[in-house]
Amino acid sequence: MKEKTMVNNNPWKRAQKQLRKAARYIKLDPLTLAKLSNPDRVVEVSLPIKLGSGEIKVFQGYRVQHNNIRGPYKGGLRYHQKVDMDEVKALAFWMTIKNAVVNVPFGGGKGGIAVDPKTLEELELEKLTRQFTRKIADFIGPQKDVPAPDVNTNPKIMSWIKNEYSNLTGQDSPAVVTGKPIEDGGSQGRTEATGLGGVYALLTVLSKLGKDPKGMSVAIQGFGNVGSFLAKFLQKEGFKVVALSDSKGGIYIPDGIRDIDEVKRCKEEKGLLAGCYCVGSVCDLKNMKNLGGKNIEADKVLTLPVDIIVPAALENSITKENAEKITAKIILEMANGPTTLEADEILQKKDVVVIPDILANSGGVAVSYFEWYQNLNSKHWGKEEVFKKLREKMEKATGKVLDTSNKYGVSLREAAYIVALNRIQEKSQNILSLK
Ligand code: NAD
Image (cartoon, rainbow, N blue to C red; front, top):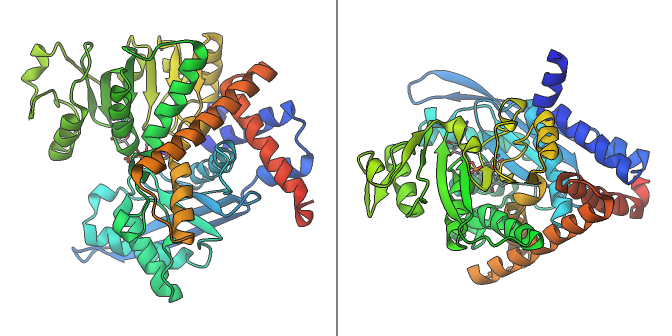
């Protein structure tokens, strides 16, 4: 029993199980299955740095290149104290699958450093990032492996990587990373892309289900890059965002949270979301009663009585322990790997529509692809053009997954795997050296 739970909670073991299950539907050829069952390459580096205090600290850094059958390895870098090899391997695998679902010419990779960046000064974080870049420089590059932001990494960090890599190679190489600041070669719309892409995927599914999004209530776990933009765009489309949370707690207003931008400003100022009950520009716990709000613990957001829940934080937030208590009929997985295998089975039995991570959050990598493409072709698209292209990509990918789910009579997650594995297999069979 303990062993079973370990498999379910270990993201890499879960990823392998998902792969084997989906492979059976399309009779994936054994060679492609073998190629996808393990990463092509794992890189682990030691990163000793001298802190401002004079203390020496050693951090571990990882880059996993899972598969490049469809193009250069592509995937984010995560800075978090819980980063470890199995987590990075799973995230890299999901990138291979995701990039095939959203149909961008990339394989899958992921990386990270086991560090809580909030404990470091900016200069220490920059030193750490630059050292990490030097140690993985032989393995990355615009046509080899292209990192991007993920949890606790941002455009500034991408800029340091681009700069360090360009210095090392003696060539200005903006396409070595995506998610850069605009003035450093970033694309318009990349910061918003993952959240906005999730909204497009959700709208496509709702339209297929014949449901009107206006007034549907939504609770969101995680209020970082993804959760905050998602909340804003959902509200713009007429959804009623009623609850938000970060790692320290949350806010819940059954009538709807009015000004997401003010809540975001409040969280940035205070460093936490709890108590950010905003009326105009005044955000205060004192407003809670007037707004009919209630404080809520971070892990209770997903079991609120709402139409849609959105895990947008880390892996394993929906487990067999809370899956039974979920009353929402739709789950939009914006985090990577938020649902354990056991929870997934429970949700399927309850007929909950789960829009899987490998589809729902693929808007980020879609716009990363647009950024890479613009860098390599000296183009500069405006925000409207980027959003239009993103919408097309998300609607097409979601439509294909919905059709496949219908055709095979499987969940949207299994359907997304089928779409991806078919595309990977097709490419693999066209390359002689891979046969
Ligand atoms: P982020 O660091 O900007 O934000 C993460 C948020 O999650 C923070 O608000 C943090 O407080 C919160 N959080 C952490 N633990 C929590 C808990 N137990 N309960 C509630 N909130 C908690 O990261 P992000 O870029 O927004 O990424 C969020 C998720 O989306 C991750 O799973 C990431 O892999 C995935 N994702 C991100 C992108 C992207 O473009 N940034 C793309 C695809 C997928």
